[in-house]
Figure 1 (cartoon, chains in turn purple, blue):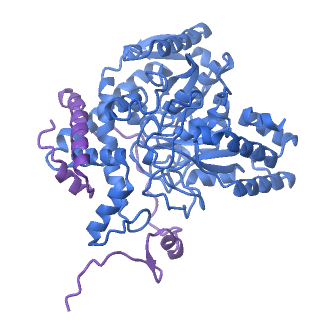
Figure 2 (cartoon, chains in turn blue, purple):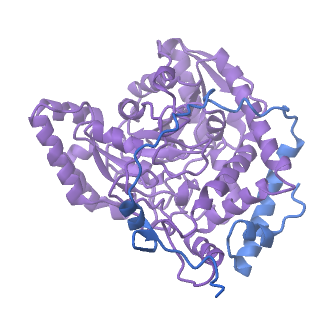
Length: 96
Length: 485
């Protein structure tokens, strides 16, 4: 089941940068864990998945604005902010 | 008398507060003294603002004095796991990723506790982002089992259980995704209840695996656990999985002496330590002697529960934890570069090893070419497990098993073997997969280490679980037990 396990590809998808030691450790551990998942491949399972809900009907609320955190509260917990806005590294290069 | 206040139940403290023989300030001062004496040994709390606690206590005493007391929790401290938001208090999930964060808002359960007059009493240690079964994955500090300081308290709500067993607080909140309330409750000799999925709003609970996560009460007795549950359970439109007001009627308990109790076939043989099996068998015999009908039930897909859980939970975690990108809150790396380089560096610096392991696993089981083989099959297995539990529970009132196969292990003993640690939750996971309520109740000791039994019921059968638990604890000496420290 675990064919094609590629730690570099996974790390890229997960936006994680791993050291060589971490790659070796996680590859070995994930291989062992995925081996344990073999029971799922061997099991006789139902075709449907739609009865795995406890709440039968999604309790959707009306699509109306409710109370929200203000800009001051949001920027106070942000790692970096300026003039009431969250600042991030430059996304688009200046072409001029 | 003040030095014994930490040994009393919440119910007894409530009676004394109501009678005017105790003030919340006196109670909180006694608990703060207990905190100074033992928290460094146990490591249950990661944060406690003593001035804020006393201010809340004075406000409670003033309300009571003015005849405006808010009910049985008025003036009683409730400590809170560090993944549940309380406005103005840290919300770290015991992770470097969130270590700087102070919550700008209250969770639904914090609102409920404030409305009930409770004292929101400090932040409790946990496995990072609730991922673990030993609280060894906390990035902030170690927590030890009060019954044996060389051993783990269980997890991920290890701080919540250890604080109770150490007499640091009478009530606590935990969260339970695969057993994170019940497993540490068993290891620390206290009571922990995971409610039916949807009974308690998760608004303000930091998401781990959203189809499994529940907040639940923990206490040193079943009576106290029920007291806290009653304060927490209410409708909340901000969590779309939370039952509405008309759908949340609990099944009446009835007489627990007439309960039909199912014992899942083979569960007492699955690597269960002999002392654990003996304590749980004694509990079964207690119920039989009370008049309960004991029968064996079949749960043929039980062996699929652990792999199913670890596929579903890690898949959902890899998605939920995608929000930690160093942009809006939490840790941002000082490594300069593009936005993607900043996000990657922030995540790599902020997350600990177990969180990274689960994100990688969840990313794999959802990735192109593998999702059908892993994630979709796990959803199908989940449907099968749930169906089998509901069939079994159609014939009995509750299912009884051990909570954990073995007593608390030594710190570090399983740290390098994640798969062995995952198997700690073998008895607790199915209730999360099936959305069922479940409780762990202390039922004995293995040497000096507590052992608990585990009851699972049909959806909204919390009253039955609590009634069965009360029947047992009334006849035994395990309620209100505390470790000598």
